[in-house]
Image (cartoon, rainbow, N blue to C red; front, side):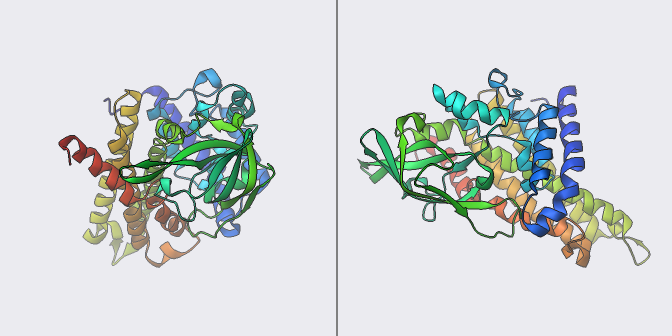
Length: 386
């Protein structure tokens, strides 16, 4: 692995960072205060992203995307991580799982998403099924030539802007030696489908303005044409397309941590106490040393896992390691940055307290830290028969 970036990658980093600084930073305080993104701001960000040629940059060129490698896309997400998630949502990165679209689904769902004509949202989590995906209680049963869906999904990010939803639903149960095992199928569901309602979710202290919604299905009828992948094949499309989303969490944690560190470093040089810059005191300077060491370690872990995907190498354990380490690193870095700023760190005048709040959810969504450790340990022990 070459630890240096190519000219093209340096250009990606500088372009996206400049975009975040110019188009995202100016609106962050307003979004954090009001809890919403003004439509004109959202439309402007989306338009500017399309002008740059970065909209749907995570998709291959053959469908109209930029065709970035996993490492290239990790660099994009790392720079976007510096800014508000509520705002960078409109930078436009549709779910890669849409590459599983076939037939008429390509023109109905995939291509409009890549072109920015429609936005998608992923719906998996339920009130009683978070980490336990097979615990889903949202079900679909056959009725004539259709599927009838009933149940609830919650914590659905970006649902207020979505034109359609990628929904995972239980479609049967198999008896196994270890007990009943639910079969899962993925459906594409248009907003406005009869029997399908999108309702407001919960207020969260993390990522204000990046709202979560609740989805209700009440005898919602869906045809076979809206099955993504194969019937009962939800885990196949999930494993092929979704597990790399944990790299996104890790990279964004790294980007946010670097922004937070930069603020703490500058403050340590500017703030004077007892006649000298506070950065000269070991209590501060050693914190800075630890912060940058952990940020760099998380960065290398993350890029290494993306590099493995580009090389076609197994990366499940490496991605889990990057996600758990980067998310826990961010918690420590934001807390240390706040401590260095003292009382000012808790004031809304600076973005420190927002990043400190935002950091908390990273250890929960896209697989909790406990789930990541389970993935890592299982990968280590299975070859030994344990």
